[in-house]
Each structure stands twice: as structure tokens, then as C-alpha cells.
Length: 147
Image 1 (cartoon, rainbow, N blue to C red):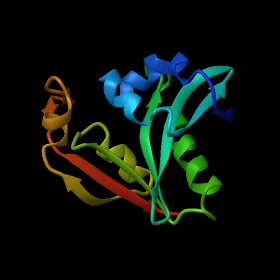
Image 2: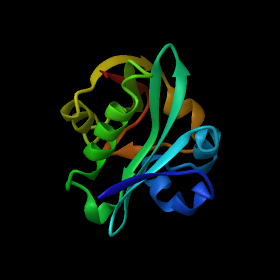
Image 3: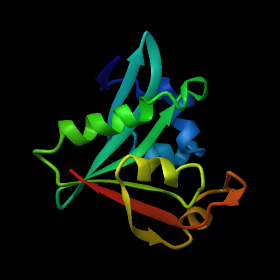
Image 4: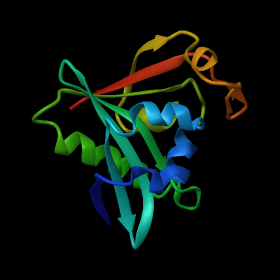
């Protein structure tokens, strides 16, 4: 298993990016300003994009694991990589996500705790309603992990 930084042609991973953020125009908002990593285990299994948010905060803007490889520890490996790699430069790793029964438990297992939320983020910023695990995503829930 190898994790490498991607500096060019980040859109080659658009199918993975859209698993985590369904609207390409939203991905475009952070893709070029963010740092992208891919996790390879023979081939690409997962990706993430992180941005510097100031105040020693590193934010995961997008993280996705190929559907056939979910539940095998690749997402957690990326998070642990970020937490270890940037611990000297940042004190907090944060992620914003929908209040979904599919994603919140994953982040909590990775050591994140709820921090704050942005009301109506998904209904105000996306062109259509988003459902995950049978739940409509309305508010952006932020979770943080101290590193």
C-alpha cells in the first residue's frame, strides 16, 4: 500500500471525487487549491483532497474509497496518514459532511468528534436534493480530530 501526492491532472480521479461530492461544480471549488493524495494497493483504491483553513486547521474536503474496496481500511489509512504527516504543522484535522448514518459513524471511529454545523448548506449550495442512507442531507456537520 502506497500513498502519493497528485499535483497534476487531478480530474483523472473524477469518478472517485464524485463519490464523495456528487456535484462537479462543488468539487471544482476546492480541487485546484487543495492537496490531493491517492492510496494505491496495486491500483488506486482511494483518494482525498485537503485544504489549509488557517488557525492550524487542515480540512478534508473530499475522501472516497472505490466502492468495491470499501470497508477494507483504506479510508482510515488515508486519515491516519494525514494526521501523522501534518501533526507538526496543524493541530486539528477537520471534515465537513452531511448528517448521514453512513458517514458520521466512520469519522467517529477514526477519532473525530462533532464540532459545529452550517445550517442548510446542502439545500443552499447544491442544484438538487441529496440523500444518503435514506436521509436528506440539509446541514453540513463539522467533525474535528486533534492531531
